[in-house]
Image 1 (cartoon, rainbow, N blue to C red):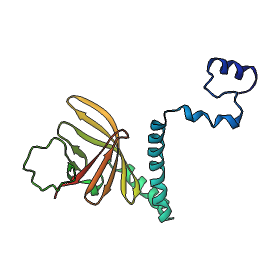
Image 2 (cartoon, helix red, strand yellow; image 1 turned 90 degrees about the vertical axis):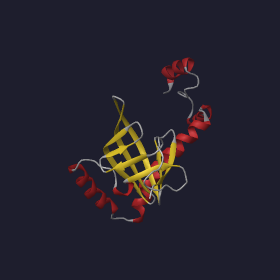
Image 3 (cartoon, one colour; image 1 turned 60 degrees about the vertical axis):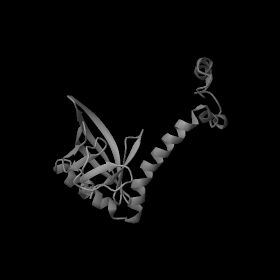
Image 4 (cartoon, rainbow, N blue to C red; image 1 turned 90 degrees about the horizontal axis):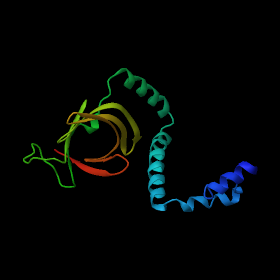
Length: 176
């Protein structure tokens, strides 16, 4: 925005960058909290690169994805078969049946994730990476009498599952 309107906006919002020549606008991001910016950029870069990496390995993958999407839409959403089982936090091996009362783990069945005080029902499941296997799962979380929408990313590597909501992440071990 140049001219009188740009000058008026700069008078009220001098840090907005409106009216600055293009060569000086690149200085504006320095005012942003660099830590927050790095976290957001890293998370977005990861999410954008994962699908691109999986498609780059197999040029015909886009056709397969279209077939999978059509098949998924005709069915009720369910958790991926690779995620079904009992999961406990931490790196230590977990043996079934559990001999202790765990409040940190959860059990995933095809249509339900059952935690200690909550349960999730999937509403949309989208695989975002083939290697490592990763899914974006939208679900309805039920706790007490409340129902809230949640979106989590599940990354599976062997018997370890990392779940993140974008603010925090926890790694779980598959119980055998």
